[in-house]
Length: 442
Image 1: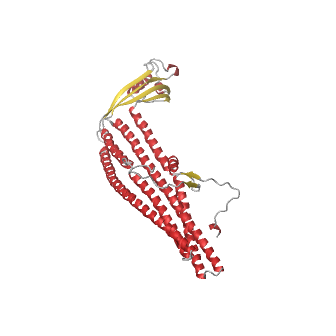
Image 2: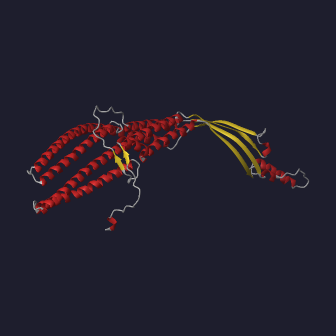
Image 3: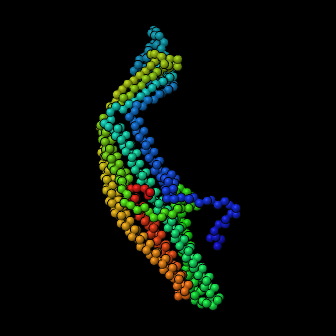
């Protein structure tokens, strides 16, 4: 089937050299390129900008106004004085009465107004609402910073686990490929002996079945390795097809367990609790009187040449008190909602503290288990190497068959794979322990 065939390579196409990384380099690249870490960092910048926005409410607001208005206002004609002028017009129509002419249409003639003005407003007393809002904005920045720390730790530990997964699948692939080559060589030897009539057809069938059995394992190991590389590339902000060459880790350093810090998840929830408690002050302030200072100064005239001249200057200063009497129980509902949200966050913090305590104790147990497993795997591999050495000597002396030697080599490869997995398990346990303590992988 054509659609299952691999894509043909373009002749002469330049091959991209693999990107060489060690664990520290992978973590550094993830800090700089991972999209989730970048998004968390942008959230911190957003909260930092919000502080400036909220602080602006405590400062005077100054506005310059320039206005041109042309209007025809008939309110004078509809007022009491307009009625008086209408009486004058009625007397002018009576015989024997002479009054000076008066045109009432002039009262409603269109007029143009030119205005230049500066206005300023300043909140005087809000019962701590504005100051508390600034405090909440600053708490929000700290809360976002803790969220960024949590996101960074999650991503970095994910990269560390992805790094281990690549090394583990690579080790498994190397072991399977070694078994495949051994089985292939064994099959060739049996076929040669069969032609020399020193082996039977049953020996050939056994060798062929051994070789065919390892092929699916080789394909699966190769697929697992490629998938692990693609996952790690995504965590590093790379194209999934980017070739990467990872350095081996060796054994992790031994020593005392690292001293942990307060987990950023707990600190974030504590900040949220403080924000909800402070928000209650803002809600209560909405039920109390507020005082504002407003002032304006400028010029208004019907002719442009009179602007910025006396007596066309106009000004106004006023202090306003607003005292809410009844808001339909809106503030009461907000306080009840705020208390419920505070209780939710408090319970989330308690649950998270318990989960972290379990995580720490589990990480400690897993570390001890990983150390014991590695020691056992190392001893088993040493025993397998010795058994393979003795099997080769026995085969050279004609005491065992080539199939027995193949079984010994396969056992040694399996023990080697188990030893390398145990070695990586030490790193995984170390990473889990540091994550439980709220620390980065390295």
